[in-house]
Image (tube, rainbow, N blue to C red):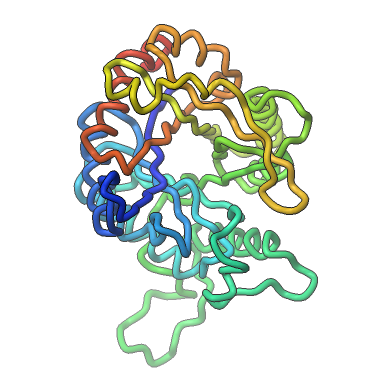
Length: 340
């Protein structure tokens, strides 16, 4: 395990018990938590994207703001639903955010998860072509996005432009060199992980995946990672890929931790359906005293396989408490697992 970051879903709720009662609260606190995490020595600040929900949605203004306020920490998403995206406009936004952060963007994308509304991507103006599924559409958007990130010209210039053009076909601007190699695919199945490897994307594997063998979650996830790396090798890519896994992990070091997470019901995987036909397995949460956490996490095969661990944080509990959660893991758990 080489890197540890946090992953926030960016929930807000007007309840008096929530520290994030509005979208503004969530956005501003997301920036402050990224700043705090960098000061604590964490490696990454990642944010989930959901549409039509009281959660973070439009990632690029947030990523740019975090990039402007920080100097070292990686900044990313986990994940952007590509069914909703115009890949060319997205490439411009991503290029801008990456340049503002001076090349620290790690952009996680995917075909999307179950939604708050029916076929929400249609409201954004997108629909699969005849014979395609919405997943096919997401993968097509992804392939276009990856292609334009290479920075090669493809658009014929106007012979009488408003401003002088460089010679040849024009590319999208601003172009962010190296960003193409910092795109991650959030894969729930072994097949999509292999597809991502062939296209040269890094791999994000979350706290759920398709239940393809009936084995415990961490074993299935570890097998997915190994299949991905084998496909990467077969594809002949020159660089080494990166792989992240997400986990809910809480070190019980004070009374607040025990009150929030010390109820002892986090020890088992669970099974559910993410659509009518897809059986999924959801990974367990971890909550224990640091010494016990180290022993439990050392048995997690997927954490051992990955190079990056993303800690899901309860953002509605506020910046100070979430900084405490991150600090406890970094100082009292991660060194026992070989971090740094």
